[in-house]
Structure formats: structure tokens, C-alpha cells
Length: 162
Image (cartoon, rainbow, N blue to C red; front, side, top):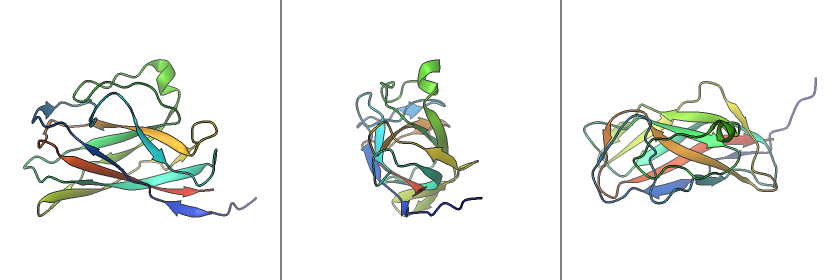
């Protein structure tokens, strides 16, 4: 049996700022700052380098009475997603690029902000989009959550590259 050497631990950060409204997200709504683009994480040190995502962290700039529950769903390629506060409804073909998810469901209030260590049921392998160092993600709400106007979220997946 061969032993693979782990080159590095990676924790890229992608931040989003939500629109200035205070709508309530429903379960399965896309949480997106603006537009219909997925979050892009530069997760590998080299093009096409593979690795394993084993957890993550999320920080919010707000402290609501109801805390969010978010699935950060990862894909090996990008596609157009629903706009902020619309249902996430990928096609069967788009789901063929699904890698796995980090669930952020235990946010803790820390003064004027909240944070959460995300969990992964099973660590999953990532392979960046062809000839890139990038994987893509969509934050999908898992509870009814009233956002704060212009609330900011930072997502940081924890990964090792091999």
C-alpha cells in the first residue's frame, strides 16, 4: 500500500455581502451577494491538484436572534445559479459535478458577530475545474433566516492537497 504525502493544508477565504434588504430566507434559498455567479475558491497550489475537504469555518458580521444554518455545496465546475433569495434548483447535469458540502449549523454569538465551525459528514475529494486551481460553491440556506441589511459572510473551507 502506498502512502500519499500531504503537501499542504489549505484554507482559502471567500467573502460575500448580502443585499441591503432584510428579507427572510426560506429553506433551500440561495444566499448570494449579487448576481448569479457561484463562489470561486482557489483551493489548490497547482492546476488540477486534488485534495480533501474535511471541514470549514464561517463568520457573519451580524448577531441575530435566529442564527443561520447554511450548506456550502461544492462543485468541480461553475454554472449559473439562482439569484439571492431564490430556490436552488440545479439540473441533473449540473449535479454531476457535485463534490460534497460543509454544513454550518451551530453558529455561536460573539458580541456583534457570529461564527460557526462547519462539519462534513464524510470528508470529500475535490478536483478543480480542468487546468485551474478553483472549485465552486453555493451557500444554500437550511432554515428560515432574517438577514441583516448588508450582512457579510466569510466562508473558509479546510482542505489538504495531495
